[in-house]
Length: 307
Figure 1 (cartoon, helix red, strand yellow):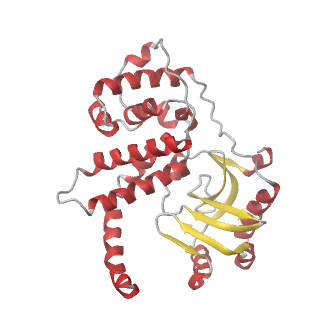
Figure 2 (figure 1 turned 120 degrees about the vertical axis):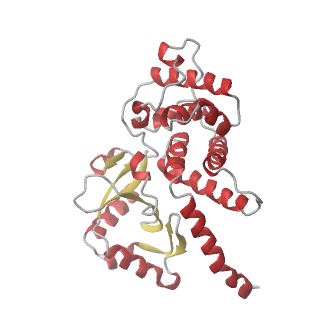
Figure 3 (figure 1 turned 45 degrees about the vertical axis):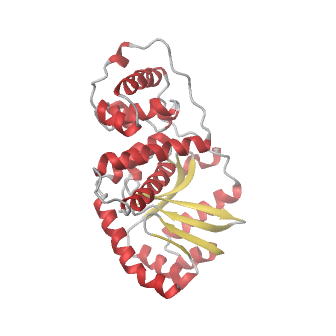
């Protein structure tokens, strides 16, 4: 059985790679939608990953190819709604009186909403949130938005009006909401990782790893660091890049921003760490999904202590 499974792997990997190439241009747009639906670039990417897994499985059962973009957006919408139900988010109630701006249903992409903090969208009920993102951020037509949401154009218009009104009434402070208070242990481990990384002290980084430390290179591989010397290969891979690390917060989540080249002022991608008793239990490396950094608001480590 194991030999038969091993024989299947090359064909499965080739099919997966071809699928990922096929959806490459759509993926950043999917993430823009999912990140605003969930209020987090990281949760948004998890929803994208789940969406693509569902799509890949479903595609193998079809006799005719779907219209890819609207099909993927419908899957992403349903997956995001399931995510919100699982986490039982709290939302504001729709307003009764709508300002004049809310009636302009045929507006194109709203640049203010494109640049708005992800937290601005989480104040909306899910249906309003979806309508505003699809129409005002992604520029979909009312008909396409209705197809994505599985509803009518009239329902989209109503949700859009209420959603725009709620956003117009909400404060738009460009702040990142804090998550749980960061423990002293995690602060120390995060900063230690950054210091060792910037010093290219790979032996020191290895010493930070726990016995069962895992590596998740998002969209590429999940593996125990100890398996087949993967830790050494990962370290050598990092050595080939000109990177600078800095600790901080993204969407209230403690994270490490990676700057490439090192002199850059904008993060290229992020790394998340999970710690246990002062050791690193999990490294999540988002290098292969750099579009996350476009929507993220990074709060540098100078503010780390107040969380």
